[in-house]
Length: 105
Length: 305
Image (tube, chains in turn brown, green):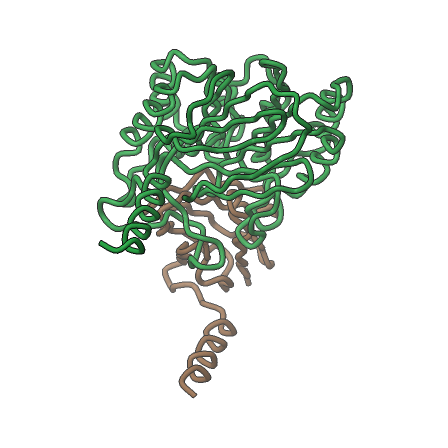
């Protein structure tokens, strides 16, 4: 029963895309080889900051935008402003199993 | 103490010995690779030997190990004490490809007075142009740093599988390197012992974490006709071994920090261990070749016990 509640909550969290903050910035946390939120919805012109909370460096590779960050060490960040509408998928260049998506409206 | 207790203790002791970061001696006799713990009675071998260190991650300073320079030095001291012919570093020499990290590594490796053969790990080629690695270790190599050499009748092949990681982070050799490999071994007789070393395991250890090489199978197909093939890797920061046909696969421990066990740990990152136990998870390997005329076969000796 309890397991079901957790699963329901988890499903709900996964289904509701996170929304950017009103100040024109948004944050994506990197923890345990996972981007969270995995799917981020933002308005055009929003600057997204990825913050690495892992003990290992990660990179951000946004192929469609031709963006490849330098290695982001522990407690360091990387920021990029999305000026065009669209759905942008990205990965970590060091661990391509890490997927994320930014939806710009 | 009962006999049973005694045996328990002996088992425990041998297990500790194995984990204690002691150098591991590899013997390749007539194509039969075996491993021993240095200092153990079995370790008395003569002939051609070389040492393997891996994943020193110089520059890493997180709580899991705040002294990676110290543990790397200890590993090098272990290796040097066995008087190997040369040293192989199977990558992730540095943590962030920084010049200062490469300089520290050069100083420490240079102080061993040993010849050093390296292949890069993904942490060594974080810069777009990969210059910091290639300027130091790229001399006489091809492409992204692959090469081969002969020593005591053994053909050594250093492969690079960390430049274009694929899918789940799996290693990739790429067409140009595979083509070179095929040509490189073409003229060799099937009785030539082959030792291949690369950072990411050439066999798939755990796909979900990218612990494998997408085109590793293709590379191994060129080596099928050889009677003895030994594949040495790093990357996964723990010992794993497998034998398939004439091919023996081995991964080395890191000298910096352990990583979790696939399917058990929640992720592939650094694994914290209880205080005082870190060195149980770090180590080096030493490989010896003793010429022999026995039929070619491969016996994989587990490191434990």
